[in-house]
Image (cartoon, rainbow over all chains, first blue to last red; front, side, top):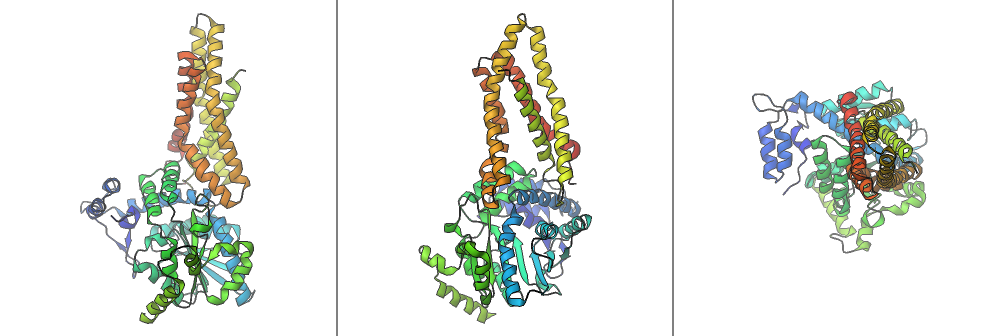
Length: 330
Length: 170
């Protein structure tokens, strides 16, 4: 049975036009029932809809903003900002080393939601003054709220409604938090390929570490910290949908990119590693990045680590080959 | 030892934390120290009022008792039994909080995941354990009554503050 997140089903946006699509409540309830998730179906059945059974878009927007606000609390308590900066700061240091200290760089947060990461980075200045911060999301309501929050606090960052890969400006680094598990099957590799095809120097995507503890921990933490049943439900499903180390490294193996995983399964304490990133960097950045990370660079591994650590499904060479093949096919 | 003062102090500290929890997750701003302080004070104020209920209950028990000294002694024994699980819980929360604020982010995640998160969920169980402790310590039904009223009071602070001030995102 597939694990479905309610928020994915009740907000549907046309990726090309960015337009909001009408969603029929009955269709969502049926999908959740077919997926063997009657609890989620009940949650959706309780959402307000018009006489045509289309979910009330304003009510859905309010709900999504409320759930994302609660979700931000988890990010705050788990100090996600510091966790990100621990990797992003050395990454930008490596980029400055290569590109020159005086450059102006741009961080683009894909699927930024309420923009916690971007606003936190703007508030703390953790990446320095020469990094422009942009959050992008397909959900217009979340983008509007992120923008309102940033303006209310006078933060130097901005938010864009649309596709992160259609921005007029070139991104130096793409980042995301909690987005990867939404991509299933070939869409995951296509997501990484889009960034490899761009002029970005690196990507750094944080998602839930796929450990056995993750669903239990997610249940515990969401139960303790979130009030709305939708948030509690989706929080646990997210942990169940988290991609394994192998899947992430395989998907991120695309031409022109050196895929790396920070704090993979065997190298980290699952109680301490709630989110961890898969990175893709231009190959010439690897040495400066390792240098900037210092002792922490031992936590940064490529596909060859998995080959050494146990029986791999694909070795590094075959991954490279498959990456090259997929590149040739594009 | 008279357990009234430590119990009152723990109840008020818990009320302040309850006020914070009632607010947390309702405000997506980044800088919100003042709002956190305000929410904690709201919890403290509500807790101070609600904790009058067990105090009044204990007073009523003493007023209605034929032997006031004996009734006081029984309540004190029950209060001590009530304090033991609450005190152990408070110690665990205190250690987890200290670890959360003092340690680097990885270790603070650990204190949050195995400490503060589950400890929040365990609050009703801790109150039940404290009531059982009051009985075991020889507090009788009067201590149990006061303990149940006190437990209900501390558990009501968070939902009340949440509904009164934070029903909608800030």
